[in-house]
Image (spheres, rainbow, N blue to C red):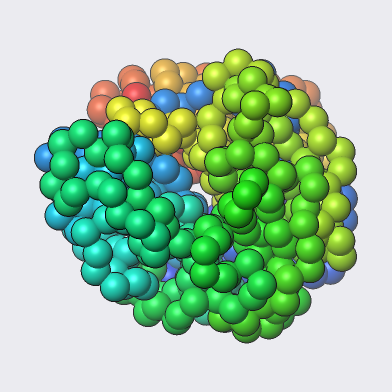
Length: 463
């Protein structure tokens, strides 16, 4: 976000406020003020870059843990940023074959958290949800196959929809078999829902009613959004073929089916959705999977909540090595899109790529609206691994300071402290040589003060 304040306002204090977490930073757009994390905004629609060349690959975020419950096949179920903490939900515990592991090792939901969106720690309470939170214990089940978890600001809680398999057909696979891929299990699968206030301790709320949840069928809650008091759910439905169905309702346990989404009628593949700032436009992120597709086509599509079964503006993002699992986060405080993704196969990690938000705090050419061009600031690259370049422009001659703080408000580097004439300037910050300090990877704040004006940006340093 771009913010310029009169010099008598304490920006250093604001750095501290942002770092503390529980305090919500007010975001001003036009005449509307909202707390960070809400989607209600005024102005042009935010745009997710659809050219992978605009994204920076950050690398591995989490990996499988050998010998633990999540040693097999990490799949992304959601990303949330709340009060300065990033919550990454993932599924693991099933590698595509029935096996001899204990019940808890069937596919469950794990949680990893981070303070910078890059360095994640798996939560000791993981798995935070297991299949038997929803269905009876059974020797054979794949578990929680698909899920999507979000923070609902209006409700003050996390909500998730989960596609849970419950064996309901002939069992020809002996429990404990070592060649599980050679046997056949017939299952039913239903959509369930659960909620949590803290993101760790979950309360299952039951099966979601609807025409798609019937015995003899397989239905998986793949993606959902919440807007204007309504849940919008897109479910993967398998019964003599593969279809996606949209449904809507004010109660997460009872939704009304709206119909089939023809563009999404393909094989086994999850769906990610992103609700834009107008609280109506939705971007679909998906990989078609079936005999008519190559299996490597990553696509974006668009719908509106007015017509959630109609997908338009379908565009191919890549046909080389597409990933099946995605979670998109618009991190306004960092000025970044964060795209967490993975391939979902055994041995594959969860990865992260980032891109500047157009008009956001990492955007290279974005002037501050409130400074009216008196002070311009941009930083590139961001995130960065060794050094980054700070560019600033002055409309009038001023005494200028350029300072880097960590997120506790501690000064780590003074780059400029001298008079400057009107014009454009650059200064490089080498984070690896910052005043002799060995800085940790993570978030930092750059503050430029010029006469009565101040500008700041959040930087992400990656060793």
